[in-house]
Image (cartoon, rainbow, N blue to C red; front, side, top):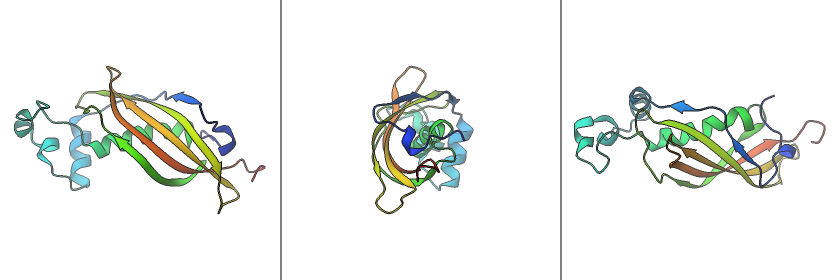
Amino acid sequence: MAGKYYEELIPGTAVEHSIRRTVSEYDNTLFSAITHNLAPLHLDEEYSKTTMYGGRIINSMFTLALVCGVTVGELTQGTTMGNLGFQEVKFPKPLFPGDTVHVRTEILDKRESNKHPQAGVVTFKHVGLNQKDEIVCECTRVGMMLKRPEAA
């Protein structure tokens, strides 16, 4: 199992995720289309040239999904019962087609679950950065994580 169990997620631990991903215009167009986000800032290059960005930017919901997705293999693959929510999401810099994203995570907090004795609640802070190490997405996420079977 690639993911970490509740007992292995120690507050203060930082993880530099090994997966890096270069995003493309196709990623942006497909994600925007399948989510019905038809904002010209994501789809219309000529319009986007007239904005403060000078061109199309990647859909922020794609950016958030990518940042969280990159963390799965090393943190939650097979050990999560699901997301409980996002407490805060920020996009300090835009992500552009051709940018490469890398992610780091810090375990902020954890506590026993009141409802599920086989699980605990963990708070993660995910930070997505571009190839210039500029933050493009920051989020605080709460997840329900399984305990080791013998500890449940």
